[in-house]
Length: 118
Image (cartoon, rainbow, N blue to C red; front, side, top):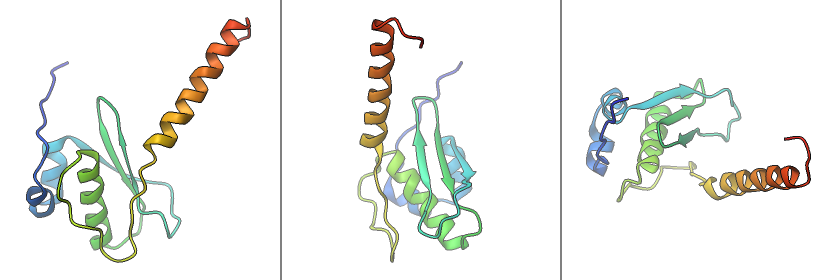
């Protein structure tokens, strides 16, 4: 596998580049979420190997573009991003996910030590 070095975009590039160009340059996967709740704005899932940005279907072009850029910027820790307009907000659930993974790992270790089935 060839490692691709990706440079963090500037806030100007994040906000001004055509969205598809940004996605291509940063090797981001834009996906459609199955979550359609009106209060859900999307999410970014970041692993060592990929960044996936999933957005709800049937939103305005403005909301789709704005949230995609903001989630990409958040995923790449872009400094100086402007605040989100209007009612939109981002919640960082990294600590919650890490805690849940830690609890799962602790349970697997406990079961293994007790001779349980894993």
